[in-house]
Each structure stands twice: as structure tokens, then as C-alpha cells.
Image 1 (cartoon, rainbow, N blue to C red):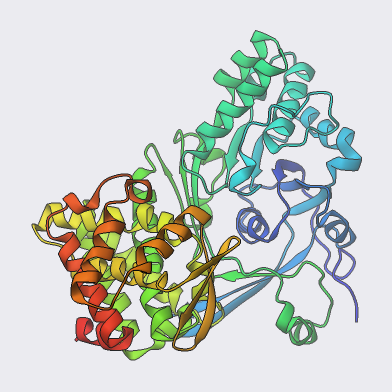
Image 2 (tube, rainbow, N blue to C red):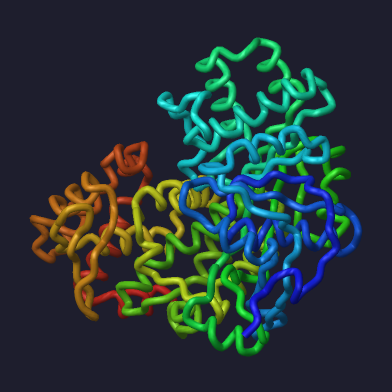
Amino acid sequence: MRKLNSQLHPVTVLPERVIQFGEGNFLRAFADWMIHQMNKQELFNGRAVLVQPIAEGLSKQINEQDGLYTLFLRGLKDGQPYEEKEIISAVSRCINPYGQWEECIACAENPDIEFVISNTTEAGIAYDPADRQENQPPVSFPGKLTAYLYHRFGHFNGDSAKGMVILPCELIDRNGDNLKKVVLQFADAWQLPAAFKLWVEQHNYFLNTLVDRVVTGYPRDEIKELEHRLGYQDAIFDTGELFHLWVIEGPAHLAERLPFAKAGLNVIWTNDMSPYRTRKVRILNGAHTSSVPAAFLYGLDTVGEMMEHEVMGKYVQQIIFDEIVPSIQLDKAMLTDFAESVMDRFRNPFIKHYLLSILLNSSSKFKARVLPSILDYHASHGKLPEKLTFSLAALIAVYKDGKVDGAGMQACRAQGEFVMKDDVPVLEFFAEVWGGFDGSPEAACQVAEKVLANTGLWGQDLTQVEGLTAKTGGFLYTITAHGMKAAVEQLVY
């Protein structure tokens, strides 16, 4: 079978206009796909040169295919399974800086390259005091970017028009602000000229962004069937969901240079991304975190099973529309539209998302994603939200009767044993709290009180929230005495 390359699929050669730190599945199914869509409409007319962020990566496979790869986007459209397939030609090449650092730095001398895109994991935007300017390359992504910008500054003699537009996609709050801070830290540590720091601050745009698309990556389990359908081999085949959203906080004039919206893409330029972040964290992430503990203890294994289940599907819908959406003080039409898209995304038959993986570090996720909805609902409605409070009890119940072993907790549900992953102090705390439980209503309330009083978990003493301890304890007793199935069915109906 033939291999995908430019001989099999000829493409128009376009100039390199983007340098992208990260060559993995997500950016190729997100940012590079968007560049491809703009190029098809002759709105951008440029390609991305990729930089492999770590020593082991995909540069060899990408270059062997002349930057080409197949992207399948799959999900529900009008309630029916739907897929789009396309060969993406937005990538020119991929550089491995651990053997080609000079080639990477040379890109800084190209006046056409004016955009930086990155996705180097959440840990990628961090200051490493051990990183050195003389390293070729610097180890960290911010170190590489600092060296790149300093070379560009010197090559163009500090020309104010040669600053970069930088769009980090790492999943941390205020990612652009944090990246800029680390770059300036390196400039100080490396004793770079004050004029360079001024150029970085005044003539480069470090934009805060919010990205949203589930990317399932290389379809290992079905690659033979897909390649047979297509008639060629593709070593970097990529897959993802249909939904996409990129919120970019930055000056409106930059939208003219990156005309995503003109290409019909779901990209929002705004001067304040906080409402969009709140919407995503509270509805998308919050719905996952609040529904999964109950669904897992109910006996289900994937998000798809949860959504198709008669009882648990109603539970998720009621949590989102009856309690999470009413707790958020933003435009209700915007929230409802997004919530409906979330329901479709959860039902996506092409994505197998395991509940146990979502349970990873559940307590910290609950604090960030669900607790604000409980507190805001209580403040605005004068009462506690029933199902979100139940979700707190379900979360506590997941840790019941577990034994801490290394970084995990050996726990059990009706379907058998499982390993709960969380920070060791969290696991040890829950094991201690459940240790004296005797099955009585009073003991359930004592467990709830100890958990809610732990300011290390929640950042505050939740026993001070009127009625929360008693209601959580009551739900805990129902779960432990009658089982999760009976408890959820009683709540939903």
C-alpha cells in the first residue's frame, strides 16, 4: 500500500508563517487544522514549521510524509453519527531541535514567520533555573522561546515591526501572561540586554487563550480498516471530535492577521476571556466531575454508557440544566447553547472516555469545577442544589473502605476492585475518615463533617455553609445503606 506524501497528494507550496512548539495530536487536529481551513479559502496563505519539544517525537514521521496527515473528525450532527475526513497540508516540516537547533533558530530570521503557537503540556510553562542560554537547545519551552526571540531581536536590530504574536495552548489559566513572565525571568537570569526586555514587553503579543476540542489521536484499534478505506498508509493519522472552540484574549486588530472567524471557525477574539473560561470549567468540566463518581459507583465504565443510561443520563442532564447553568451569572442563552453542545459531545459514539480516568485527582477537580456552582447556587437561590450536593456525597463515597498503596488507593465497588488515583495525603485522609464508620446515620454525618471541615481540600471550612453538612451526610447514609442505584433513582425521580 502506498504511503501518504506529496507525491501521492500534491499540494501548493506556501511560505512558513508560523513556528509551532509541539507536533502532537492536539495541535495537528486543532491549530494546524484551522490554518488549513484558512488556506483553502486563501485567507492566510501560510504554513507552520513544527518544533519537536522533547528529544523523542514525531519529526521523522512528519517529514517522511512531507508534513501531510489525515484527520478524521467524528461525532453527532443533528443527532446522527457524522464524520469528516481530510488530508491536512498546513505543516511544512518538523524540526528536532535536539539535533537541529541551528535550523530552528534560523527560523527567527524569516520575516514571514510572525506567529508562535505552542502546546507543551501544562507543566511546559514553568521557569527552570537550571536552563542555560548556552544549551543547544535550552531544555524548557520558555527557554527555547527566549533564545528564539533574542536571536530575532538581534537579527532585525530590535525592529519593533518584527515582534511575534504568541498563542500558547497549554491548559493553564492566563497562559500568555504566565509565558511572558517566564520569558522575562530567563532574560534576567541570562543577563540579556535591557533593550531586549523592552522589545519583548512592548512589541510582542503574549495572548491568553482557551482551547477546547477532544482529540483522540492515532486510531490504533482501527487503523488497518481506515487505511484500507483510504487506500494509503498514514503513520501520523489523527482523530478528534467535531466540536472546536478557541477563545483568544487580545486586540481586535490581530483578528485581521489571523482571520479564523472569516473562515467560519469557532474562534472568539475578546478583551476578557473569563466568562468563556467560567462557562467551560463549570459546565463541561464540572458536569464530568459531578456526575462521574455516581455513575462509576452505579456500575458504569464510560461517559457514553453514562449518557445512554436511562437513570444516569437524566442525572447528568438535570445537574447541568437545573443546577449548574442557573448557578452562573452570565447570559443564559450563551450558557444553554454551550450546555446543549456538551450533552452532544458526551454522547459522541466515537470517543470512549473511561470514568475511572476522569476520577483521577477528583478532590482538587471538584474544588475548582463543582464547588463554585454549589456555593453560587446557594447564594442566589437561598438553598442548596440537590444533585450537586449529592455529587459531593458520591465523591466522598468513592474513597470508602480503600487501602492506600503507593500513589493509589485500592477500593471496591459492586463490580470489583479498582485503583483510585489522587495525592497520597488526600488518600490517607479519606482512609482515616472512613476508618471509624459503623454504617449509622450519625456516622455518615460525622464523615461528612470531617471532610467538609478540611480546609486543605476546599480552601475553606465548608461546614460553615448552612445545611451542607447535614444534607451531604444524609446522602452519604442513603448511598452506603441502600446502594448508589437506589440513591440516584430516588434523586432523579
